[in-house]
Image (cartoon, rainbow, N blue to C red; front, side):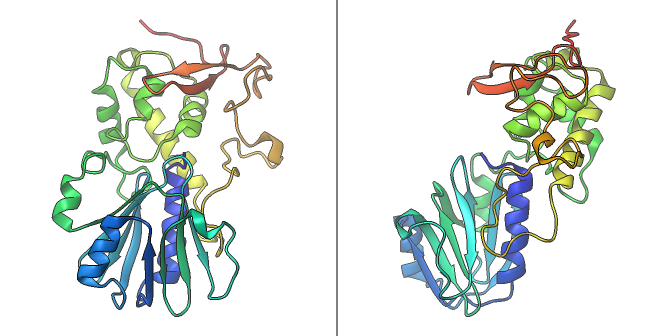
Amino acid sequence: MPEGDTIFRAAQTLNRVLAGQAITQFETVFPKLSRIDFDETIRGQTVERVEAQGKWLLMHLSGGRVLLTHMLMSGSWHIYRPGEKWHLPRSSMRVMLATEQMIAVAFNIQIAEFHTADSLRRRAGFAELGPSLLAPDFDEAEAADRLLAMPELEVGEALLQQSVVAGIGNVCKSEICFACGVHPFRKVASLTRQEATNLMATGQNFLRANVTDSSSRQIVTYRGLRRTTARGNPEERLWVYKRAGEPCRRCGTAIESRKQGRDARSTFWCPECQRNRSR
């Protein structure tokens, strides 16, 4: 599933090429979107801005509607110039809107909804979002408070709760815990406040490090190039994620992995660098 930095980069690119532009064409396979287009006519409206909040992408239109999308596991937004060949088949298109200069296509997106400001505030899963790690006013102390308010959860599972902070996904979860020396299966109740603050600060640093202003003008989702080690070798981009059985990049101990949480997401850690100190 794309993480917060992926969505942020996609929103940056879409905003750069669409903001201020009038929509000349709108297509979708979703009946509810088609109905709103029929009633209100999306064509002719202007894209005012595109922004990301956690793993959600919001496209604000001049008619007062917001197109809310979530990529889930396989969705992606692409942008093309008129006449340019699409990288995926038209059968994978879920939403398409065009301006005179650019075409934006959402492929394989399962969640795409039009909202008003009022309905957006009531939208389950979005209304409960915690502060975004990539927000300019992100408050580490507030985020640490939210994390510590879930003492019964294991740390790795708690980091994925978007009501704590918005934007952390399964890759960053394991990488954040490793960088902070925290065993992902520790209970949140065992964390010190300093450890909780470090986890939040590290998450912010990792996501910020993977956001740039030079996103591609074609496929705008982030495709496997996330980097947490700051090492130049592309084979050493990550500390532990998907490295089960391989030697730790710090101590040489074999990385371990097992499923975690209600959704049974894979978690990776070094048993030496991240000893379980639950009390």
